[in-house]
Amino acid sequence: MYDDDTEMRTSARGGGFGRALKNLVLFLLFLGLAFGLLYLVAERNARRYFLVPEDGNLVVKRGIFFPIGQKPYLPDDPSLAKAYAPIPLPASGTKIKQQAFAERSDLDRSLFDTLLAWSKTRIHSGDPKTLEKGIKYLSRAEELPTYTDTQRQALEELQGEVAYYEAKRRLRQSVDSLEDVVKKLARARDSGSARAGESKALLGAIEQHIAALRRVLDELDRGIKLDSGSPPTPPPADTGAAGAAAPATPPAQPALPPRPAPAPRTTPPRTVPRTRPRPAAPAPTKPAPASRAPAPAPAAPARGTAPANGG
Image (cartoon, rainbow, N blue to C red; front, side, top):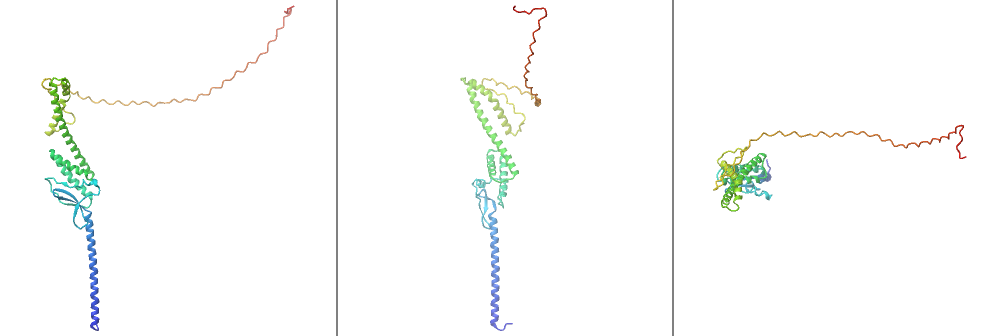
């Protein structure tokens, strides 16, 4: 119980101020938590990568520092600008949906698989124009900086396929050019000019090989699998109006079984004879001078003999 009205009003005023202060503190705390949460969401979005189908292209984007939103990804390294440039979407195929990735390496692997699948179906199509599109997708996959060992192996296999088709295309162009050469050499041979003999010799050297190459290319176009063990034998070719056929190549001799390799000659180790030290030759000794024997005394004259004297 309060004694008077003044005391009641003072107590009510103090209780209202305390509640207001408490509500303010709670509001500020809630506001700080909300801003902290928004900051974390914005930072997470700024670190993410996106694959977005847009205007007929597959565009690589990166999030902005905001809870939502992306912008085209422009790498700091200029050498990677081509790897992440917009990629034209194929006219037909699986529809691409937007994808998000937490790391750029995850983006690279996913984009690599997509490009490899697009290129593989087009490289094996057999159509030159479609093959060119597949090669473009494959070259974009080569630009990516990150892929796994399995993806690298698949990339090398497709590069080998592209090398085969490119070699086959250039071989066909070369055969077409050589056939034009044959026509010119045949005209020179039949003209009776001073180069007729040389033209005939050149025709005999290249005509059969051109025919063999043309036959191989035609078999490949018909889907005939070639035996890599034995090369095709070129057929004898007609040399033209003269009716003289080029000399047939002698039949191939049956392959002889390989001779066993001779065993390597081993040179016995050279033994160095042991030399015993020769005894030192004794120093030459001077022969001692022969002692002179005393001269024999003259013999005494015999008795009865007179000494021989001058008298």
